[in-house]
Length: 182
Image 1: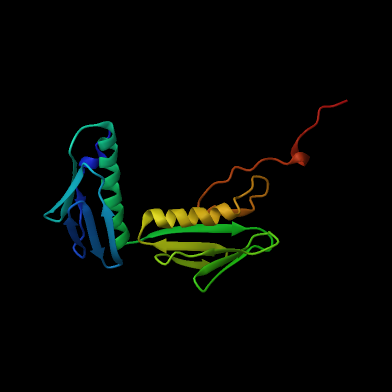
Image 2: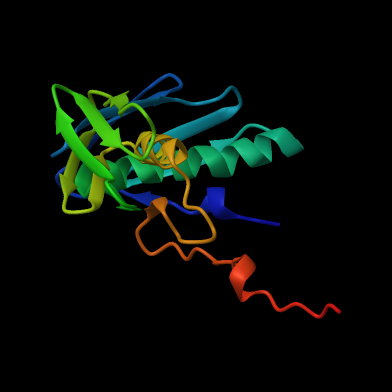
């Protein structure tokens, strides 16, 4: 059984925490975020730490307990350090650029792929790398996944968009296969 929800969350010195009812508001050097706790889950801040507790011991409350604690921990990490996802694109003629709150990518289609960038995120392009930065871990990950989804890496040549450090297992093409025929 996981006890991840019982772990106290430490609050860095430069952050302030305000708990009103079921809403937890955290503000730090990179901004402010709030999280509405699910029914049956409570949080209290004491001595530079946040303790998340649950009202009962049902299966749903146990799962929400750990999830709520990790969301609050990710809020503190995001507001103090921020989150970064890096994506690499590879392919002949593949380009990307950021302008007017949109990312425009040429990925081998007959048209450019244009995605609006959420206001809470910063997106930049350096050489063949797209960098997504923000304070909300789920929003950074969701937008990076949306970019990757526009042209997933293919398994024969590895062309497409992949996360930095992601390993793409390549397949052998037809020419590499041996034939044993008459």
